[in-house]
Image (cartoon, rainbow, N blue to C red; front, side, top):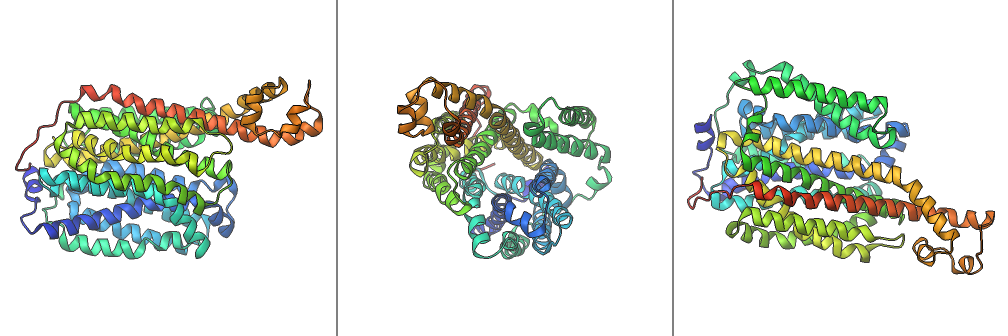
Length: 517
């Protein structure tokens, strides 16, 4: 298999190679964008299909569970179908599922199509990142990684504005219909221009069905537990049962997989020190990236009352900063130690996240501008060098499996980060509100200014508040308490992001080859 994949390095003109790769990037972009545009318009879909509020989140959960199960299978599917045909089949199924979602007339039908959409979309991201190290020589990999990385992190940034605009201008059906033409175009171009490889049908004969079931059970239970824990409680019977299923099936999967000669996922990649460090960085980036993209809409929607379009406009700052920084990141990545760039990137990203931990109920675009700029500048340095560390020193036949695991770590980091954020917001808002009430009762001017209490109320205040004053202040205090809880979540994410620096010294400097791999 190694010889076959090495042979995939193109002998044809660079333009043809880049065209095939760009087609893959477009498909990946649509898959990531789909999650975001749907998230902003869930209330619209709920009212249109008459979905119960407590079931609404399954529109997203079904997609995410199917995606997280598919991601680590990318290596197996690449060996079975080849890189070219895996992408063509996956993007074709994604287009078909998107059309099915748009035509859905019931909740059950929509969720069924979302499962297919998530599974097919889940293989697209690792396929693109493995293509970087399979299609291109060493000196072109930084640019290819940048293109893929920019699109991968730009999609969550522009998702809210695209979703809001489509829903307000047309209808919720267009959230899915926009995938069809770009998806078909990328399938056709990829089938035409990606290099041909020999498939390995023996992979199907050696498929370990039990390992597949154990892995799917572990990842599904983990995703469900992370979804339910913030509201049901981490110690609730349901969540503890799911975590137990995750641990038992996950442990059985790892034990079985490590003993097999042809495992469905090559966990042996974690034995490579640089891949392990790169995966840790990918996991922490997931916490910071998904966490920041989640916290901003929460604040702008529930505290400031902005709609999806206004939220999207505010969040464009990150995307613009990231695009401006990308050429600089490419130039530095070619010349500097990936470990140093990773450390600088994560330190800067942690600072950018921490800058958002000092908001008040009146914070808006201006207050969010510079934190977004710092995070946007840092993102490419948190993505390019760790990708080089993780995948750049592996042989080509190991890259598809490793890319799946590398991207899975980022998704798991994001899922855990969002669950942690929700837990902080749910559990800390009430005690923070009680503390604000106590400070207001004591005449604390700083607390009054933070809450936005009317000056005339505080000037004549002495002792306890009467019922009318309590009624006036209550919504202000609740909002202020939510802001404080959100600020605490920002700070926790900042600290966790900063912890990435602890793992960087354990990586070895990646060897560079002037003539490519």
